[in-house]
Amino acid sequence: MVSPVLRPDAETTRNALGATLRDLRTAMEEAARDLAASGDTRLALLPGAGLLAADDLADGLHPNDRGHARIAAAVAGAVGRYGFAASPAATGAVDAVDAVDVPADTTHRTSPRPAP
Image (cartoon, rainbow, N blue to C red; front, side, top):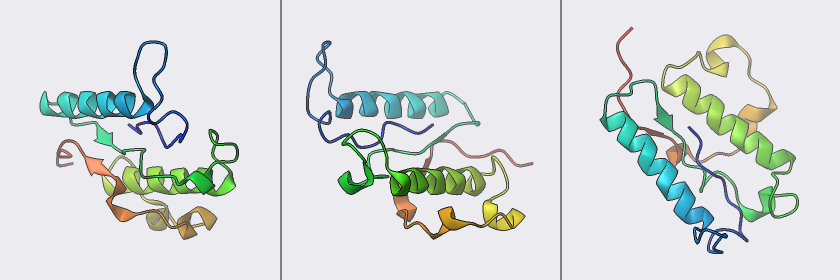
């Protein structure tokens, strides 16, 4: 699961129900951790807050090309790293997405992957 990515205008602005994007992101991440703690072995959490910077957004909301590439690289890395599928490098499908700088500490396994 990828929690919401950065949206500067909504991080601390309350919506009609009183929640900020930061609040919603925290709730989603806690729900993922709770599911893992209750035995869901098919779940990995990719926290979205650190995936993008403000300059990765075309209009303050939607990712630009670099932002999309950063998200894609992070998701592809997490999918491969946690055994949900072969990594792009393992399949030979390395392309421009792999060249995007994505912090290595942005993914968190919420539960151990079962042995094959």
